[in-house]
Amino acid sequence: MELLEVKNLSYKLGNFKLDDINFNVNQGEYFVLLGQSGSGKTLLLESIAGFNKVEGEINFRGSDISQFTPENRDVGFVYQDFALFPNLNVRDNIMFSKKYKQVENPEETLLDISEFLGLMPLLDRRIENLSGGEKQRVAIARALFSKPKILLLDEPLSAIDPTFRNSIMKFLKDIHRRYNLTTIHVTHNFREASYLADRIAIVMKGQIKQVGTASDVLNSPSSIEVAKFLGFKNILPVSILKEDSENLFSVDPNTIQISKEQLYCDYVFKGKLEECMGIIDHYKIFINVEEEQFFAKILKRDYMGCYADRGESIYIGFDKKDICYL
Image (cartoon, rainbow, N blue to C red; front, side, top):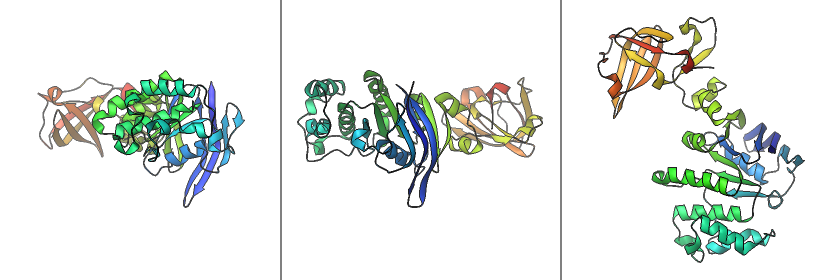
């Protein structure tokens, strides 16, 4: 069921503009806004929260809330830098929304959230004495305490040590399920988006370029622009496949087979080895075919017995199912 609809939203800040943004978020969905730094993701999140006066509509359960103040939008916002109040201890930071909103059973709510997030021993501690991970949990607890209908997360993993990234991602998923949240999460990290998202919106230069399930967006980009942003390799003309089209296609480097002998795939090409780079457990291989160059990644254990010298002829092959048409 649709909970939030952003319709024809525009907002200009200096020379940058969010331009005619349209997407919807369903009840209980984990929705990710994925884009490079400077693409407008955070500006869009702040606009949903009510920090910017925008053109267009932000419909919540069918009612336009675009003119509502942040306090009246029933959202919880977790900033990239956490934005905790240094003059308040952990307990008062978490319960801050009591100052402007009536929270049902506040002490019970504090206890439940603090126990779940492992904050009980920290409630009387000053913010300056917390680690980065502890500050993040306090910021999330503060957002949850107001019992928001939507949780907004602005690059929540950017300040976290990479060694803890996997556990924090699972932690965010657990919070989402535990409190039956609808979550909108901003990130530039494909791995985060792939693990967390039910659906993804690609944000580029203030515009939404593609919206769909995580699998569809990450595996089937709708344009060359999105494909390049997602790091797709082997973006080549369809004509090389002997198909009558002026379009392009891409094939995953990991799905390309290589051999000095003939291969049995849907598409097989004979080319010349341009370069072979050994990278720990795999090879990065570049093969020239006609006027184009293919890039393949082969595990070292799979490449044994098919090594070729630079300039030597070699076969490459892949199947139709591994092609993404652009």
